[in-house]
Image (cartoon, rainbow, N blue to C red; front, side, top):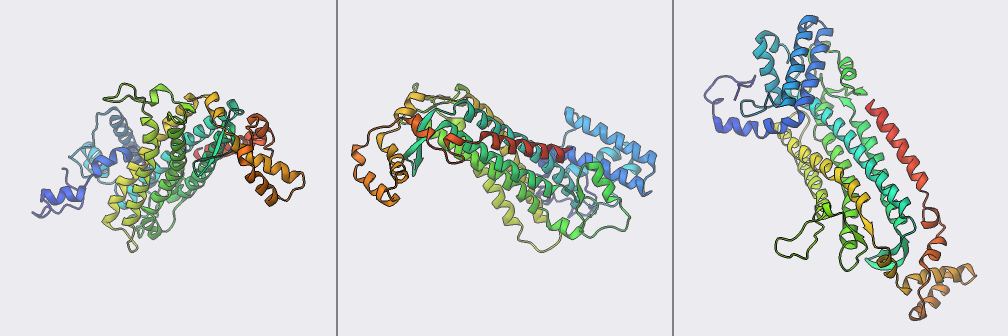
Length: 439
């Protein structure tokens, strides 16, 4: 391992076991953060030039070398490995190999504390933007199916028992609005996280007139996170906020996956899943297992675990503590798992097929009992009396016309008034707001 800046050269520092414990997984985890660390270093270099700590020529040279480093890393020619303690030391090593004097100046006015914070914050901004795009695509896929299969009748369930006639339009519109809700939460959270921590060093500022606002602008942040103590205390807290967005989206994915697990089963037979989303059995030739749906159903647990792991670490007094190093792994694990899961959901929604006959046949006569009760109430019978009369004759009810039942469901949001265009307009406004934030 290349020697860290804090290395004193003593025998204690050379203890391999201790050094490996201190480093942990950082150098591996930093592969996801490295491009953002390089980008933030370039902005920091330009900021140092603006206050005269670096000459314009030196800053230009450093920025050029950092461009080369980013490209080499992208191509796999520069690898983060056991030579380095973390991504930060790798950057300084790369620059110092080209010029020891210039490479040694890059760290002026910053600490590894705010250096990792800004890399993580940029990573969160990028990941939340991707998460918003994916969530919007899922909502749009649900809206399309709600419109395309609007009048396909199916049972509506409460307590997993048949309740009243429903439709694919209502079912899919419900998820379209849910994912639009998730998108709104994601947009609001992205705005809250859109602040630059760089320039606060170890949590108490530095004796330099750093151009923090200029660095914020260069990095695309909407504001500067002002107080250095708050910057340190927000580490982990902001990560949890981003993971909570992931958790909300995946909770709706989990519910959709549960529905599909049931509806694709032989007992229901409502839905045929796309072939590529199923697998066979290693021993039973007859099996067509909904493995992808089941894995989607479980993915929320990864994020729940990450949130709990980070929150357990955050029981700390003010200031930086090395415990915070362990917030990085659960964050990256949770975000990566979320983005991977969300990427395949639109294809699942657009590719599934409905067995209309099976769904209509599942509507038994007693599913129309509520319709009869409401009709009696409309005719002037007190609702509780109408309810009692219908219940007494439940075995004598004949199966009604599902389409007629759905056509009478005129309350706003119900089948006859799904208001898909209202959900779609809200979705488009949120997408516009998201694009403005990214711009």
